[in-house]
Image 1 (cartoon, rainbow, N blue to C red):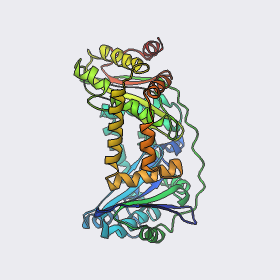
Image 2: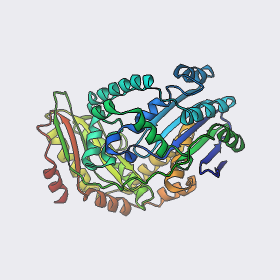
Image 3: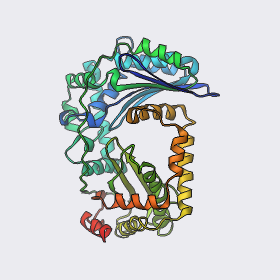
Image 4: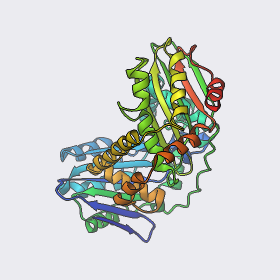
Length: 418
């Protein structure tokens, strides 16, 4: 049973009781992330995520970890471009402790200078690790090429110079602008009753400050090219296009297009490029919606000699799917998408996150039957039309490694337009 309450201060509290489970996931989801940051504070959302666990007025960093692990639970957080999340999963009898700890780290974090300096070093190490992981950092370069000179294109971790210079005052100012009740959803899923979650929220989130944050600037997809020669065994590349946002009429058609194109072992890119030609170990596509735009792309890791063949073959699949989709492969994609959705809903953590995200994006939680009907209604013609819509936008290419055989973006664009 799903229940949603909006408190007088603007905080939304949502819960779904899931029968026959013994655990509960509880999270606080802040409707702010990388795209809400000014250029000089890029990485502030992620820095705050780290600092939240470094001590409050009542608990030091070790105490936070001990309390949750003393009951066998776990606590974590993540930063995305439009959201920052703090969440716990515990046994049902420990839900009150989970809500207490999350409320404490969001309302009463001390952000002590000594801890800030220590965590600054940790984040710089994280940035260094990402830079040394080509199949990770290539996505940051892709994002920046797609959305240049704007918050949507900046890295979630921030950059080394900005993190080195970020001061406590910047973090507290950012928190005071965005970490208010009107920008937050407290959600829970699992073995919990809504009235209990309401009582916990009122007790532990009462000190959230009122905020009136500015809306982030609209995203402007541009498209472009990033190339970096590196001494690596593989070429890593991401080729993509402007996708569709949440709420777009083509949202589910785009997800189905991604599934049949590069969503599994039976997908076109996997079969044609890995199974038939042996050009890659890893290749997959993704459709990533945002609130006002989106990205659609595929990733491949290939050898230097194979890159010259891989890109034209992949581009040909992008061209072919605009006019050649069978009922059989669309039915298979629908089955995969439905199964993925239903399997995710069996996890209290995934359900908790989905509830919060849908409230923040759509203003409501979309019923499962409505989603299933929307997926079922997509026809072959819809997938072909969406493919034409996406693949005729300006392309974006990010590639690093021994890239001499990777075609230039202009050549790829000409091939797609032919």
